[in-house]
Image 1 (tube, helix red, strand yellow):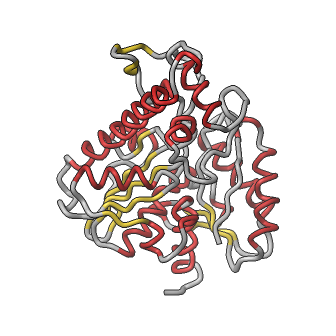
Image 2 (spheres, helix red, strand yellow; image 1 turned 60 degrees about the vertical axis):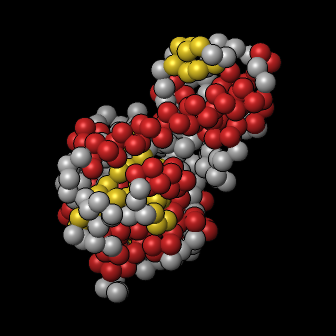
Length: 318
């Protein structure tokens, strides 16, 4: 079973406490608690190390009745008491869990996990994770982390201009609309993908999304037709996919990934991974098919991968 809860850490750590409470009542008691994380760089913490230690402490306070292991990437699973000691390895290592599970199943692949906020592009070569970077900073430079996602990306971060009625118009440098608005207008926003409040606090409807997107070019929705706003949304969607493709082609230019290695498409933006594979002429396998689970597992691929890795490493199964 896979389950998610919205957890806006930047609004207060009490949201994480609430999420743990909600999820524990739904998921039952496991044989082992396995943890991976992101969010240690949020405003609630002074540094990445403080964030890792703080998130681990909150988890330890909620997860009882079974051993707790935290995923430290290349170091494997460590006792949660060692979280601060291995903070650099634990911080945002969720992508490594997904890629490690892919490496168990396939010798060569390119994992493309497009989530609500970011896209992870991780190569697997000869049955091993072949990431050129490990930290967020290293992965950004390598093209393996692209800061764009299906729901939470600011529209003005997806492009710097847009075509409207035959001319290029600069964008308002203001958080008026999100990638969730773009996808909602296009009709391809996955169920459950948009879990945060809208930019203006109003409804999550196509009409409201058109109004928000229109503000990005200094207009009201009444100044254009539904078809024009759909075309504008299509431009933003294309610009977003191009940014992900740029990262993929940068990473693949190192020449270590086999030419016909498949793309493993994961995340709530799995459709973007499939389209990227098509454009690159590579076969595509969905993460859920790879692990024999439902689409919900793909939407939270790091958590699903972590459960299977923990089963192998901690519980000694398979």
